[in-house]
Amino acid sequence: MGKTQPARGMRDFLPADVRRREHVIRRIKEVYERYGFEPLETPAVENIETLLGKYGEEGNQLIFKILKRGEHEKTGEADLALRYDLTVPLARVVAEYGDKLPKFFKRYQIQPVWRADRPARGRFREFYQCDVDCTGTRSPVVESELCAAASDALTALGFRDFTIRLNHRQVLAGVLDAAGIAADKHADALVALDKLDKIGREGVEREFAARGILAGSGESLLGFFENLVALEHAAEFVVDERNESLQEAYNRAVLGRLVEFVGDHEAGARGVDELRRVVGYVAAYGVSDKIKIDPSLARGLSYYTGAIMEINVPDLAGSLGGGGRYDNLVGMFSGKDIPACGFSLGLERIIVVMTERGMFPEDLERSAADVLVTVWDEDSIKDSLAFANQLRKDAPALRVDVYPEADKLGKQVKYASSRGVPFVVVIGDEERARGEVALKNMKTGEQRTVGREQVADALREEAVARP
Image (cartoon, rainbow, N blue to C red; front, side, top):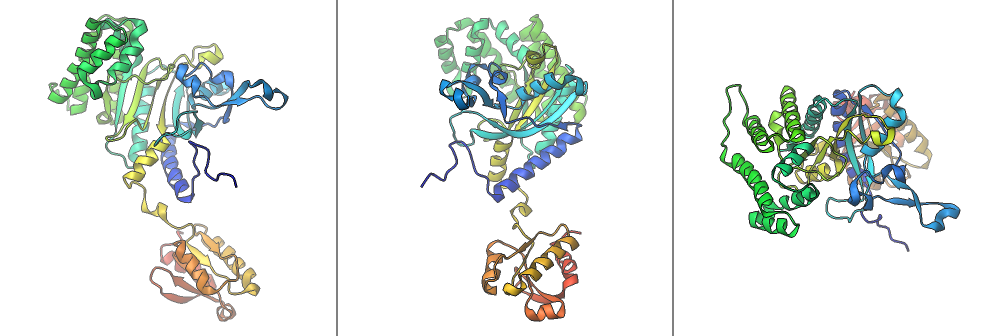
């Protein structure tokens, strides 16, 4: 016998799993559509050249490649691949259908992606992304709108304790340059700096040295970030007279420190100004308290060019989502300069956290049916089917199941109980002759006789069938 488990890093979703997933997707879609975003779907399979070279060296290694088929299979070459994310397919679509799309194309896309990663807790080879993007404008209004939409989506799901960390690729470059880090050592410096919480200042200094970063430059960079940590913990900033929140005051203070440190670094100064505008526009959406400027945020994908964002909740390794501006990606396909910015919520992580915290509504756990119609004997099967059909017409919201065999009545009732079905309909010979049914409440054990035409109304009274 063959193995029955799914492939490593892949999962089967049983009914309860699917209900939770559909609940999360429905809430996210509702929010995205309230902001004027339209749905898009793209194929699971892309031409391999569409994907290669868009995600950096590490990303190239994680692309699921598909070998050529038929007589070409023996070459061992790949010409297709499973999509790695939803952003590159969007860029391809904008390049392909540019003239048919709106000037500002606002789309959301909720589909699975595949990565040949090492499976681990909360990390899968097949997983869904919930993306929302806007192409056609460089305005920071887009970044603020994405932050607001992501915030509203998480709030609609019941999250209260999340933070959207905000940074800018040019600000990051400006800080590293100002500290004297050589351009070819920027990535090394960020990798080492990311370990500050775990290994402390001395550990990071040792790592800097091992990666060939000059001691003076490393000291300058560490000093800047340690000052920001001190700023946050000592609350050295002052809330001004414009009814600022503590978070807004902190962000303003960080922007001030960035201006001082970056100095006349042109791209860095421009990035700081863009961050300031994003924070200002976010205030108009009323979600300022969720935004935290974090100059250490880097995000790995190589196609980001401007603002970058990441959502974190306490006690969760990794993020619930992230994104940023990628103004050059569409041009790689179209040859035209088409700016773009997007955000992706991680469906799997959201579901894990919501499950652990008991955040799903109770009615998601309800049974698959509201009422089970039993079968009295072989001769009455057609009558039970016809009654169930009429019941569905009389109460379209009612979920009606029929026991498929002429079994002992006790077994049928026991089956309903095992599935959590709240009501059972029994149509014996006597009930059929009188045009009635016996309606049994499985929770209370109470059974009463009801006219066939009144069953839908009786169930509505029990708040089972919604009108």
